[in-house]
Image (cartoon, rainbow, N blue to C red; front, side, top):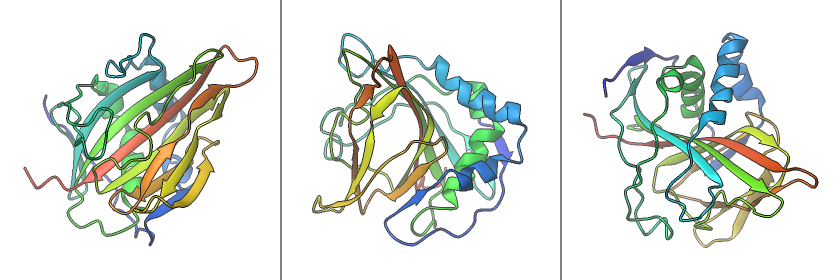
Length: 240
């Protein structure tokens, strides 16, 4: 896959502590300079996500695309598509298995909305950003019906195996549940919240906190409930 750089704004100083909870305003403000159509096209792309084939369930409830990028000297550069891998120590369900997810579409990977959000999140990492020059981008949809809940985190309380992880709500429609919870290394609860408004986010230091999300359930009377998330993993890439 050919890499393609795009120029990015400089990051701002990040907050202190092992995690930060963002209301919708910081990311909405970052996107405000873009045409409304660009943001709408970006969020609408969750409607076309293919099923996650690594769930091991007869009926899919999670839909996903993935891509990686290098952030260097103000540039966001798309890297060749590759499998997503987590060690068994951090993911007891799918760890140790290279998972090849469908790639981000070219439209999403090149979008001004994506690069704006990635840079805004990079500027709010809860700790040093030195050498944090690479990111993995996940578009994820979890669905639920009256007869079947969806599991955003089937592995339970866990770490992702990265330096930092940003969790951004894109859409929440006709669902209940999906409470996000953060824990210290001794698994003592640090924070719990439900992301309800688009562009609300949690940015955490994956080395200092663990996290999980409770099941997504369809709201009473709903045929299908939907929870769309943008996840961005930040880590050192080690140059070329």
